[in-house]
Amino acid sequence: MAAWSERLAGIRGVLLDISGVLCDGDAGGGRPIPGSVEAVARLKQSRLKVRFCTNESQKSLRELVDTLQRLGFDISEGEVTAPAPATCRILRARGLRPHLLIPEGVRSEFHGIDTSNPNCVVLADAGEAFSFQNMNKAFRVLMGLDTPVLIALGKGRYYKEVSGLMLDVGAYVKALEYACGIEAEVVGKPSAQFFQSALQEMGVDAHQAIMIGDDIEGDIGGAQRCGMRALQVRTGKFRPSDEHHPQVKADGYVDNLAQAVDLLLKHTES
Image (cartoon, rainbow, N blue to C red; front, side, top):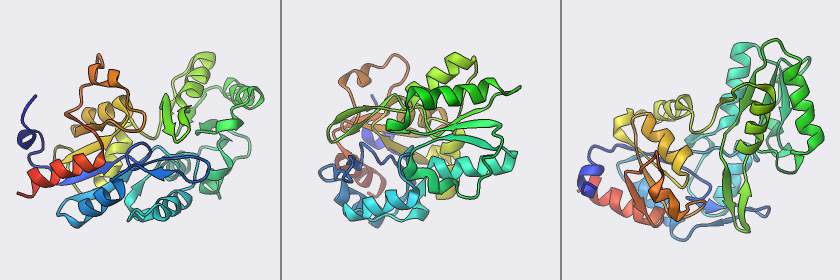
């Protein structure tokens, strides 16, 4: 593998995943990963541009930012690219009326969206609401459409909370895809459009940006397919087998965000 100076050359912008990189969540708000609060502060004091890029779909953007601020992070709503607001823009632009299978915490993001006579299904990480009854209702809506449209706010397999690994929305997306014989439109990571939106908001080109994440497929693979470089942290959902993934190889592996920031500042500001 090339030296760090070569792998990090020309970086002007940094995309940060939240869950598993900044913090591990739980019902009480979670806890920061050691060193991550200070690492974000150092990064934002540098010459590098910073944007937070998350698939969080259990909380509204406001609730997410409030939680991170309580944990000590320097972050504002305007610095976060999240799937719920992006989904609402898509729904309005295409005149779609969704049947929503989403958690109560994110429902406020869809205020003003017409949900009468649904012509699509929107799926988020609904947690306990992923009952047979609710999944079957979404299935019936899709099967009743001439051209079924399933929009997912992410397609992750699992994520990390303080209590351990948690099943993510991807498993339920796959169930509806299989049952209905369709393919979901994914708004969050690893969608190329989602990453490109974050880059545009940050004002840098893909080759000038690096993604730091804990998900080898959603964060690392998705970013690399968009022309970015990507570092995987060994926190959150990271598994040792990720370093031997058959299709995706990160541009580097670091123990945590603090180590990633040390490397970035050493090799981009010297």
